[in-house]
Image (cartoon, rainbow, N blue to C red; front, side, top):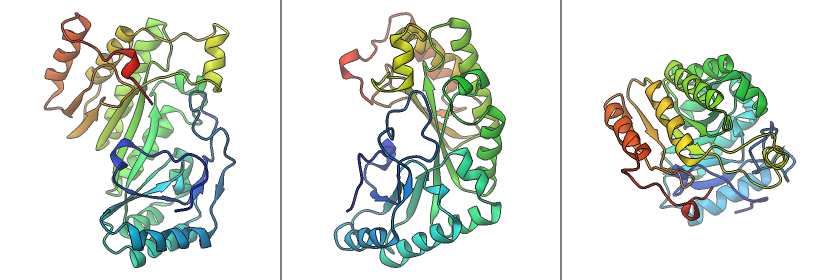
Length: 291
């Protein structure tokens, strides 16, 4: 397979064919994200994508899922993206699910008819980075969208019957207790409004070379303590009402692994967090955390 730079994919795509159709991220301004800082965004040449599909047809016949890399494949113009999906169907007929990252820019660019066309061609799961439902926090991390736009785009995806997985980020609002809890509450409210199929809560890890790292170095932003981020997670879950979604906080970055079906497991999950806050459940040690 032809890859340019490091390839990033969601944890749930560990056993997927990773087809790189774009390089980098078309937004690439988020203050906390180091992933694509050294990549200039572009759509890969059709000939390279075709060659990768030929490779996958020979060597990836046991893999039934495919993930479109890099940061936001949905940004690809409709005609070209349709051609890619048609080629996947032709060359890899055993693939049962295709997924991609998607930001609000890409979702808004596609009409409902275009998204339906993509879904019918196999693109049935989108991963959207919400990070926060708090407008002040979203502006500070330069996410490029406010809460209203996040809700608009999330509902648009769900309305068309596509699966939606949303990522949120614990600790991103900093160590001010008022801002931290406002971020948590607002995030829960936005998640409730969208009602995604999956929520993945990650815990912020400040990476050298990012604007957030520089702000921390200058003393303008401070990382919350582990228990403060755990309290934030509790507040977020308390304000999240899903019809039947899975809420994960079991990423390698998290201090307390959680997997809960909401609303069924909500009370038990809040009780577990309360036990951890009281020191009755051990948190993951710092050396075991990772991006």
